[in-house]
Amino acid sequence: MAVTTLLVFANGLLQWGDTPPDRLIVEGWRTFGFGVFAGLWAILARWPRRIPGLWELLLFHKLAVTTLGFLAWDATAEAQEVTAVDLALVVLTSVAYVLCRGWQPWRGSERWRSD
Image 1 (tube, rainbow, N blue to C red):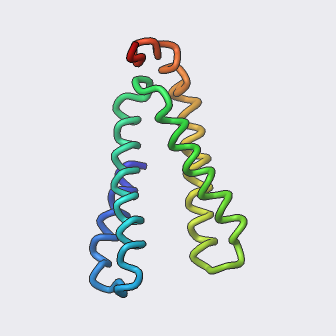
Image 2 (tube, helix red, strand yellow):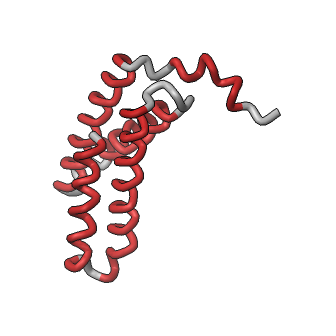
């Protein structure tokens, strides 16, 4: 997922030249988000049980976007495309969460306290 998302990030950068000025900030936000998510998935691929809450944070975001997409399903064709992609990411990330036992970092979360 990290590599695919990184490719989408690069594609977003390449498309900036065609972006109308009134959409530049939104497209920049989206493109940078792809870069962040590529990094997060890369971290999870390398250290799947090291950071408490990272899996859950990713799943929250993807579930929230998917829910929004279903609520705005008839708005645009883009809404349907985004919803389908994010739903696939929810499924894939959920499967990876189970296979990697992504809940286990919480067992050692005492080390994250800043008492």
